[in-house]
Image (cartoon, rainbow, N blue to C red; front, side, top):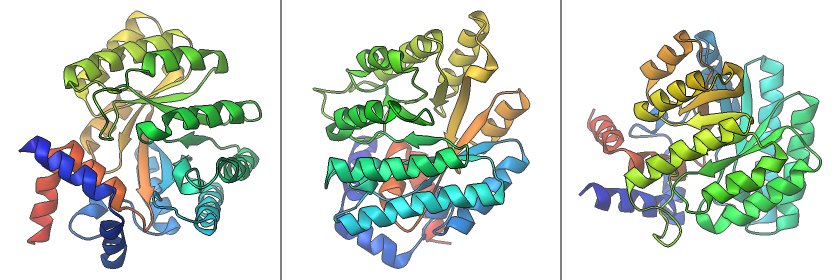
Length: 304
């Protein structure tokens, strides 16, 4: 049953019709737990609240369904607006983005030009931009563009997914770039030809890439709510005398609040991924697919 529900939500997340309906009816039925709002100001207020108890953030203006150059330019403008809002408000936050929202599926040149505009503005503000990794079909081109951008910018990082077979080789290939990586398990539905189908294998690979990237000496964001992974990381950095300044824990807005706060009390840097915007449906569906408990939360809100 859990597997069926996961597949259903992942499929819904890619549906253009469902996405249009979600935009029409707004943040209903519990989505507001995971999405900070539809406006930039709402997202800034959410980050300010996180900052007050010692957490930092990375803001993501959601957008995954871009079908024209005009929409891609609008999405890039929203990223720049978000960077300006972070700077003017003084909140502690980076920016995260998806390159498909910047026109990657339309034109590589369009996407790269948008990325450079965003990175130029981030550099003016002394800020950092994280490229989110998307599905396997976009993996290689995302890494290729990241390498191209690193020739000119040092304020950009990318995400690596533990459930892909190729990931260990990608870590090796990115070593020469001194890459700042967010390491995740992976949330997209992928073929068993390219990804580990078993959770235990994904967990094992996740531990291996955490070890490798930390020992390579590069900044590492461990993005997980799995307390076993968090405990493993704590033990590993302690036994290998890795500086607390070389890594951070990252979690999603609205999930594991108590754990986030406990890690801050223990002296670790905790960064919360804070998504916002009107194009929130695909993101919300992936959160429901990940954990059945999230589904029950939503169902309870529907009948309140």
